Structures are given as C-alpha cells and as structure tokens.
Length: 483
Image (cartoon, rainbow, N blue to C red; front, side, top):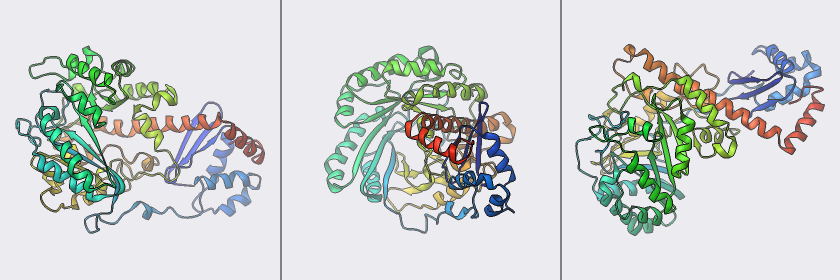
C-alpha cells in the first residue's frame, strides 16, 4: 500500500482514497468495509500476486486500487521529487515570471500586521525607484521568458501610489521600448495598493492598460478601521471604498484581500458579502502571518483562532463551485487536484520564477525576505547569484522537513507558506502559542480545505451522467462494492 495514502470517510458507507504522490482520487460510494479489509491485508512483504491469491473474489477491486496508486508493485521513487541545483545549471526559459517592483518602501498607513519591518524595509525613506532600475528589472525577466511567455509586473511597496508618476513612467518604457524588443512575449501589469489615494488619471491608466488591482479590505468599516489605519489611528475604509467604486464603475478588475485576524475570524461570511457589495471580482482570505520581515512577532492578541478559521472557511466553501471559483484559497486547492500534480514545496520562490526588486535594485525571492542578506540574490546591475534558491528548495522540500516527511498529505499541500520556516526566528521557543498557530494554519487548514475539495470532486463526479454509468459498471464488476 502506498505510504502516501489519504483516506477519508463520510456517512455510513462512503470512502475516498488518494495516493498524494500520483493524486488519482478514488471515490467508493458503497462498500467501505470491504475496501478497508483488503487494504488492511496489504503489506510491504506481500506482493500483489499474493494478495490476489488471498482475495480471488476481489481481483477487480485490487486492479482498481492499483490503477489509482493505492496499491502498487513498484517502490516509491523519491528521486522524482528531487531536482538539480539551480546555481550550477543555466536558467531554463519559463512560461511565466512574476516581478515585484518595490517602487517605494514607505506607506501612508500603519496596518497592525504590516509585513514590512522597519529594519528590512526602508519605511521612513520616501525615495522612489528610478525608472532605469525598473526597466532593467523588466528586461532581465523578459530574457528568462520562453516565446509566448508572460511577465507579471506587480507594482508593490510600501504604497506604490505614493510614486504614481514612477509607475506611469515604467509602463511607458515597457510599452514603447521593451515590448517591441520582445514581440513574442507578453507583459501584464498589476497594482497592489491600499487605494486610499486616487490620482485623477488612475482609472484611465488601469482600464487602458488592463491593470489588475489587489487591495486589502478586512471587512465593513467597523472591522477594517481597527486593522488598517492612518498614523495616529484615523480610519481608512471610506477612502479605500471610494477608490474601489471608481475603478469598478470604470470596468477595472479589483480583487479584495482580507487578512484574517482576531478582528474578523468570527465573521468571514460578512467579509465576503462586503467584498461583493464593493464590486470585487474575487476575494482572498489569508490568515495573518505572525511575523514581519524583521522576524519580529506580532502581538498574540491579533492572531485568530485556527478552529474558527477552519469552520468559517468550510462554511464559505459550501457556496458551491460557482461561489468558490472567485474565493481564495478554495479555488487554489480545488484547481490543483489533478492526476500527476504534486507539490514538494508550496511556494514558487525557490523555483526562481518570482523576483522582488527593491528601490536600490537589490533582488530577493520573496516579499517577506526583503532586507535579509542571506536571501539576497544580487542586484539588477550585475549577475544574480541563485545559490540562495537552492538553499531554500532544500530547506522547504517536504521530504526534508521534520514536520512534513511522515505526513501522507505532504505532496498535496507542499508544506504551506514557508515564511515561518525561512524567517530564522529569534525567541520562537518562548512563543509556543505562535508556533502552534503557525502549524495549524499551515497543516490543519490545508488538510481541511483539501479534504473538502476532494469530497466536492467526488460529489461532482457522482452526480454526472458518465460517472453514474461508470459507477454502475464498476459495481457490477466488483459484485457489490460500488466505487
């Protein structure tokens, strides 16, 4: 039997099995005890042939379990999950690269969970990125793209709208010089902003260049204004909502992100409804990370209850496939459950497909790692050193991590967001609640959403005509074990 077995039970007789390495889920609608009895008899010392001799009446069931990777007659190949070092290998062309341009590292808000630490991010420095640094960054990324590939240029910060003229100058250079030089490659622009600022020409630029927008809205005003305030505590929701309204009325695609804290963990349904009222094209629900880029812990009082998050997430997930399509992380999990899909890390940063460039041109693989010298890849004015990416990959690989290597779900979830594993935290031993919180929003939440996604796929397959016909054929072949 596979060592990566996911086994879920529901109701009086339903069973859902999956080998997380190959991920070809098998739904057993009737006959759970019979399947469990057969699996209990499987062992590494017993061949499939011997199993067939012991259970001749279950030959069709044994073949079915083998076809889905639940039973196998070949050893598990961990080598499929390894990769050669990036530092020693030439950069392979990619079909997609994401570039975060920190056009400024200061902000006009003081959110209670800001990831930008004052030591690693230059929050008091009002200087903006020069267009030359931005264009050089875009050019380097375009060189890594294969023909037909897409470069996602994300204007980030700090608050990028504090440097709106720079953003426009960068887009002009991309459109006038860099796109014509790479006619077989695409550039898409994205803006992450609190939208408390609204330059007069913002909607014109966003709609003309099809810029997608991401904005944090943690809920209605009474919730949002507890978390995202101006210096001194002034509320920000009204201005943010006004700018969102202008963009939505102009036809822009605006995605709203709710950072889940103790302020809103009891009312995620209200938050989702508020996003819809504001005109959000999609919603993101992200549990707060307990540390910032300085590796300093946030106050424990703002951390949400993982049990409440899981319960609320499952409730939101019951909206049906249409309702879930625009809700992250539900759409992310369900979209990744496909045969052959496996995640040895959950983050794209170690693959080298994400670059974060700060004002001075220094390059990092993740927005949480900005300013941490250990993860600096170099500067856009010179050659990048990819060795930190190799170190990240080895550190985050689910077969290498103590908390992951024995977990059957590891190739389905990839170990979750790696921030806590990479942050090299000081004093974590004195923060047991924070450590446990981080584990639960990584492991327990991932397992809950993956399980719900698997059952959702099973229900969808059961309720379709072809699936019913196949189920009936299997039921006849298995003599009462309907799968």
